[in-house]
Length: 150
Figure 1 (cartoon, helix red, strand yellow):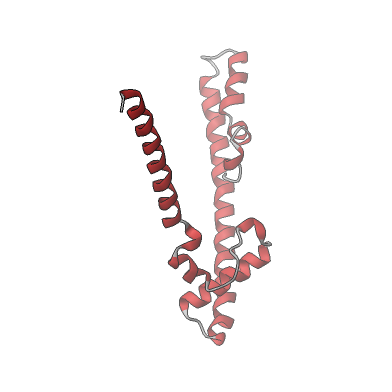
Figure 2 (cartoon, helix red, strand yellow; figure 1 turned 45 degrees about the vertical axis):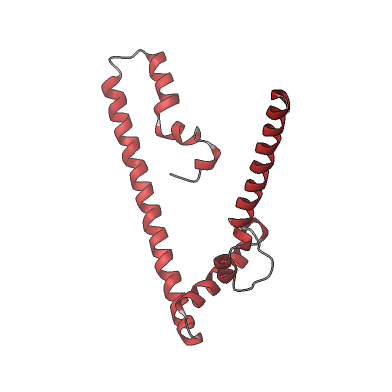
């Protein structure tokens, strides 16, 4: 066998081995066939991604999963979930208030910084700085995947 044939056969063999190993690794680590995933689903039929369900369905599914995980009786569920809702509502409100306070502080601190630096920069530079550094312009210039963050 000449050298050129050996190189071509080696290339084909490497390609086939890579394809076969990729296929085996993919099927081994596939989430849908993983036993822990099946157990977590609890035999709920076809897997649905978050986009396939309404918010109410996701909430109900999460409640059912948590009730199973905590092994809650019906009476415990009746008491637990309203208390949990109150707890999470209070947390959300506190976080919202803190974010508003933080934003007000950042705006105040930026105004102080701007006043301090206004003697160094001319008006055009200040405008450009505002378009880049002002807290509200920074928020609006975020990539779409970060827009929900404050």
